[in-house]
Length: 322
Image (cartoon, rainbow, N blue to C red; front, side, top):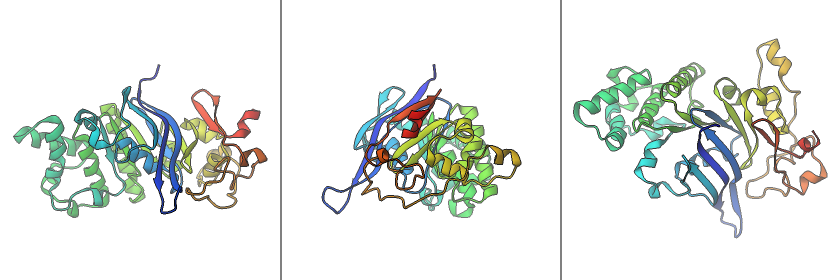
């Protein structure tokens, strides 16, 4: 039996608009589980609700409905109502470290704060731990006295990761941590993330729009569209046998470099129509305005998640025929 560290049940997050009785349905009823030591990729286009999911999990937003469980404890409250012991266990690395690192403070000072709060260290032991975390993310001790403005984007992101490690967490949300970086720098960040995950038995929720990146590093992938998860399963199944038309569309658009990759790549599925507004999502399936296989039923009913194989679920009427 898998050791579940995070469980999300029926999670919703709606934001009010200026129009009466109108809401942005950023998250509209999602369910998933994350196992201890696992990397789960949450993938979708901009506006699909990926980052909002991350912020609700972190307690930056309170859920409109649904439940969050961390180590079997209900954490469906805002961060200011969460105990310090929970904040220690759950950390986040944001997309742009330039805005999340205080430019007026030294890197040593930035990395010291979470260690002081959560590990109660001070003096020489505190500095030793900071340098240890710098070296864990493959930055030299000299960075201790530097400031964020003195280092590049990749190094800033490694500092942000080292800060997240300061509380000695068990779960880290990675909110598009490599999307603003050059490809060569991305590779180093990813390699460092994987090494740290193995060394510390960390669980990652990796938010990204880059499905090809998930192919190489994720254990499982959840595909998100207009606030809903439409397919979730082991990474090898999603790439070799994607079932939801939206997943097929995403994977078929990924460039390939070998004949072997081209052989297993799904047939090109062209996107039709426009992405609906999250304020005015049409009835039925949210993907029906773009789906080449749309049926009358899709325009009236919202499909339920269907188990298509072991640990693989899809939200589509087409799968009922299989």
